[in-house]
Length: 342
Ligand code: 11C
Image: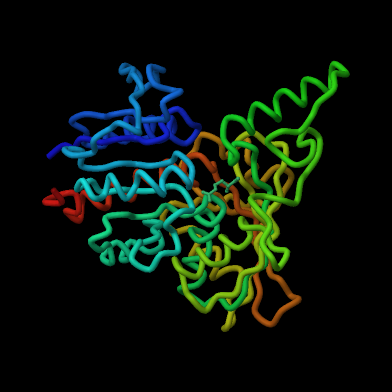
């Protein structure tokens, strides 16, 4: 069996990574359609090593006859076009924040809650979580299975590619401008990102939390356990690709570093790199282009009765977005969810 697949937002950083991942993993495609807004129509994007696709208009595209659509065009565009695609009988995997917290939309990380796909209702939309949530729950799940997590305190170090190609361009141009003494005006970020860090990702909410911080809490609860308390501080750093997180976890029961080490060593999608020596840990540059979620610096947090602390890094465009979406699609194929939708 092979499928007609649409990639929506195909010219963006995540859309391009989705096309690359579909090709690399030999997803069973009969045809791939690259869709984007009208200003990108006619542009070319690569699908694998050999194929080049001409971008077509999302606005005028009829999803009838398309089996699967992977959306990453921005929440406002998904809000309009994802339901339109689903109504045409296409299974939608949406990478934006638009539908994640809706009760009839499964929010899935295949290594953590594949069973959530069973709740896929008539709606026909599956949500891909936020990148910073995905890598954290992949690391938390094997620990939660041992000693139930009560509370997580996390600080993130998020790369500019989380803000798309424009974010990457801004870091590049500002860095260059500073070296040659040119003036720079922040556009994508609220302050200068080159040689700086900015404690602000996504919009502010009434309680002073940013939406990125809120997403990490509510998405973790929906995916892993509704009883886990999460407080996040999300920070943009001058790194092109790869999000890092310092994670502090309080458990309900005792858990030793040895038990945690063993569980993380066997965990799907995760690599433990923790040599406790100079350079014996993973950084975003090491993780860029890789599929795994990496855990390093695992140690006891003696400030709470049952605590652990660790460092977690992953490529936000791959496991944080494209790879997770394609893994959901593979799971959907395995569970027959692409059959008989039309
Ligand atoms: C960032 N995590 O790094 C964001 C990007 O809700 O899907 C993804 C936003 C989202 O800026």
